[in-house]
Length: 175
Image 1 (tube, rainbow, N blue to C red):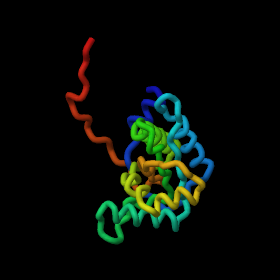
Image 2: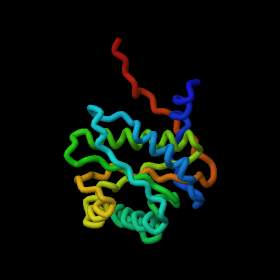
Image 3: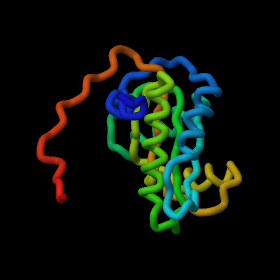
Image 4: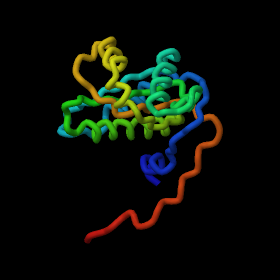
């Protein structure tokens, strides 16, 4: 089987991570895959922010928990020690689609490199807050961006989940 198709079929969302740090060389490869995601008109209007600093990671996790309405102590990032936040220019009509393609590339690249991943939502809500706007400014990001998602990354704790049986009647052919 083609290696890309194999990786697509085997990748799963991981919800239990080891606390071990991921080497920057591996993170750089994952980020590079995100940079090569398809995007509308080749405009490349998405950005990524790698967060592997534990204090900041925990702060974002706590904000995400509150937005999601979970009980105190719950970690919506499932213990992942790293995340890559994907954002897209707010005035770009294709922002959600382009950002989603970046997220897909990040997750597939991570899987191919032995790293577990999970798409975590609520980035849009986080970056609508003053905290989010100030955080972007602190990084020198002046344009207005919408949060698309967080790609939680880490080494898998335990077994990789088994795939669900594919639902029937999801493909229609017109020849």
